[in-house]
Amino acid sequence: PQGGIAWTLATMPRYSYRLYAIPIGPQFTGYIKEQCEFFNDLSPNVRKLLQCKTHPQDYGWHLKQQLQEHCQDLCFTEQHITKLLQKSRLVVATYNATTFLEALSYNYPTVLFFDTATWELSECGKSFFNHLEEVKIFHKTPESAALHVNTIADNISAWWEDTQLQKLRKEFCMQYALRADNWQDIWADFLKKMLR
Image (cartoon, rainbow, N blue to C red; front, side, top):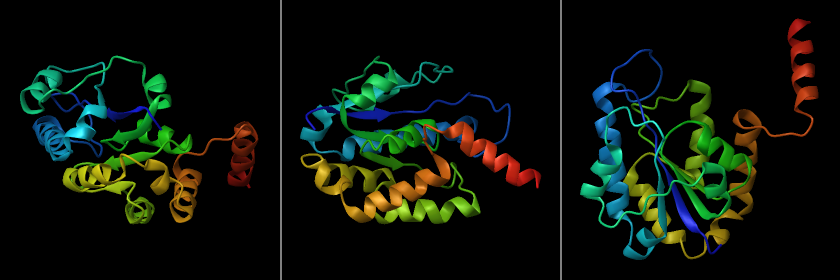
C-alpha cells in the first residue's frame, strides 16, 4: 500500500515484419502521445509516485527522451519487472500483453489502458474486456485511466477489494491468465478431451 505506481510501457519495431494487433510502424507515435497524455492528466501527487518502466529494446524510438520532453520530472526505473510489480501499490499497464495478464493473475491492483483501434480485440475477448471496463480495470483512453488513478491512488484497496471487481478479475484470469499448481494436469485433461 505504501509503494509506488508501476507504469509499464511497450515498444514495437519501427518497421513491420509481421501482422498482428499492435501499433505498426508510425502508429507507435500515437502510442507515445497517449502515454504523454496519461502522465499529464495525473495529479502532481500521483506523478510523484509513478515509476516508469520502459521495455529494454527501444528500436530507435528514443522513448525515454521523448517522454522526458513532454513529461516533467518523470522517474524511470531499471528494476526487474517482477520486483517492481511486487513493490508497487498499483500497476498501470499500457498494452495488451503479458505484463497486465501476470499482474491480474497475481491479484496486483491493475489499471490497463490502450486504444482498441490499434490493439484490436478478438470478438470473444471483447465481452471479457467490457467486464474489466465496468469495474474500471480497463480503459479505452489515457484520460479515463488517469482520472481513475487520481481517484484511487490514496486508497487502492477500497476499489480493488470490491466483490464484483474480484469476481470479474477471476473470470478473466480463468480465460486468459490461469495460474494453477496443477497446470500440467489441466493441460493433459484438456488435450485428452480434444483428442476424443
